[in-house]
Amino acid sequence: MRFNLGFFLAEALKNLRLNVLMSITAVTTTFICILVFGLGLLVSAHIQSIIGSVREDVSVEAFMPNATSQEVEALANEVETWPEVAVVTRVSEEQAFAEFKDKFEDQPDLYKDLDLGVFPPSIQIQLEDPDSAGAVAERLKEQGFTERNLSYPQQTIDRLNSITSYVIWGLYGATLLFLVASVLLISNAIRLSIFARRKEIEVMKLVGASDGFVRTPFVFEGLLQAFAGASLAAFTVIWINLLFIDWSHNALPYVPISNDAVNAFSTLLLLIAVGVGIGVIGSFLSVTRFLKKI
Image (cartoon, rainbow, N blue to C red; front, top):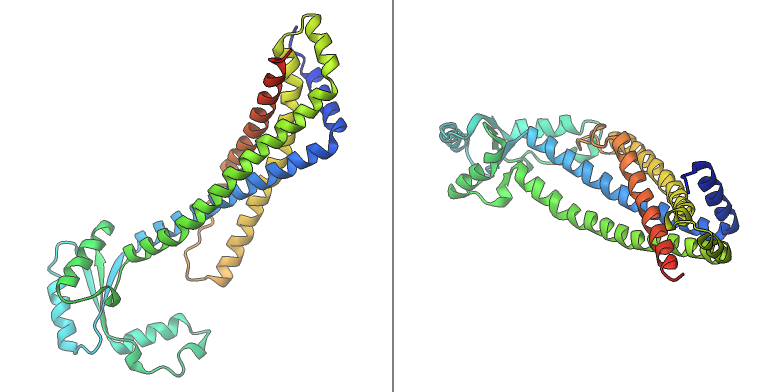
């Protein structure tokens, strides 16, 4: 029997009308699955973007509490001779305090009661190669510095990775659970459709209908259910991303949140494709299992 798209779509839509409640449940579960998966993608993309921004402005800052200006100058002169170092900037207590005030000029309560000694003198070391931050930090530790007196990008990167890896894996774990639930629910919805039309299917098989001809309307049914849920979830994810970017620019002005961290079009395609895959797999497995019994 030849492929007839109009016939298969009409049959799929009829099946959806006959099992409205189960179809809504399957669409909702697919929506939740793709939404959680999409949120995981957003978190991962923005974290990688922040890490990339941090690496672009690589410097190592060594704080020297209670050090004299001569000691700061001596260390700066020595560090300037290291091959990994591009530029060394001396920062006095006064300069550090002034920079802090400039950075938080719209929040004077943060610094109005602070003493100048809260901000120790330091040297800021710009590097030739971002990947040498760890090596420079190790050399400074040999000079007597501790992790507490050093600030460099690798620390920030390690902390970001440590904190967010658990969040991302948690989201992906939840996605996997919802994915399995979506496949099972769509499979059950298709099974109900098959059960309601089992006599018709048996007659079709008797008159020579192939397994593919019998299977296709039900696969289309599962595809439509998954497509509806995945599309709603995909557009919701993109909307959440836009809201997050607008919010972060106001609430987190010093965190480098990029508008380009997430490609909206490719993310939409990926999420919808995963959702459609869920529907096709669930319906295909359900129909194939039934056809093997007749």
